[in-house]
Length: 113
Length: 113
Image (cartoon, rainbow over all chains, first blue to last red; front, side, top):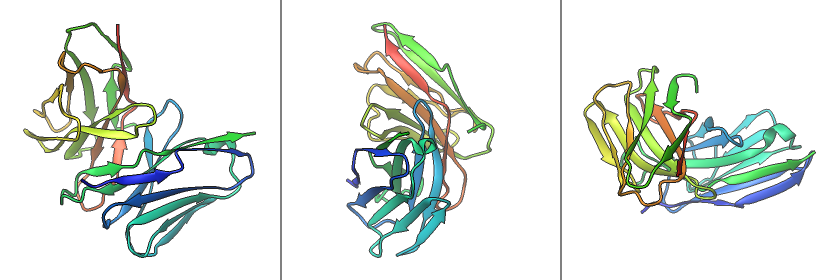
C-alpha cells in the first residue's frame, strides 16, 4: 500500500535556528497537505500544494512540492517557541479514494528558548 | 476546530467493556473520520464515512465499530476485542470538493483501568 515517510522523526533546535522536515511518498500524489499539532492539541491544517514544483510561503514557513509530485518539504526560518509541535504531511490514498488521506508519522519540533 | 465536538475528553475502560466515543460536527460536512494516535506513530485511520448510512474500514478497524445514522454524528465504539485500546482518538470531517482539508476535533484520550 501507499506509504508516506517523514524525516527526521525528531528535531531539537535553538530559537532562531532554521528547521526543515521532509516528506516522501511511495506513489505520485495529486496534492499534499501539511498539518501542525501542538503538544496536547489536535492537528490543524496549514496548507495544500497541488502543482508540480509549487512553492508557497506563510510568513516564516516555506512549503515545496517536488517536480515529480512524490516529495515535499516544510522549512521554517528563524524558529520561535511558538513553532513547537509535530508537523505532518498527508497525501490522498493511491487507491483512488479522494476522501482518504495517508499521513506521515510526523516530525516533532522542539525549540530551546 | 470549533465545528467538531468530541466527548468525553478523557475516558477509562475496564477490561471486557465496550465504550463509545462521541463525535458531532456542525460544519455540514459529508465525510467523517476516526483516527488513532499513538506516540511516534502518526495518525492511523480506523473508519471513515463519506455519506450518511455508509462507512468503510480504514487501516486498523479490528476491534472497533461505527455508525453513521445522521450527517452530523459519527460515534466510535471501542469493543472488548480491541486488546490495546489505550490511545488518543481523533475525529475529523471534510467538506465536499476535491482536495478539501480535514478538520479535527480536540480528541478523546482513552485509558485502561
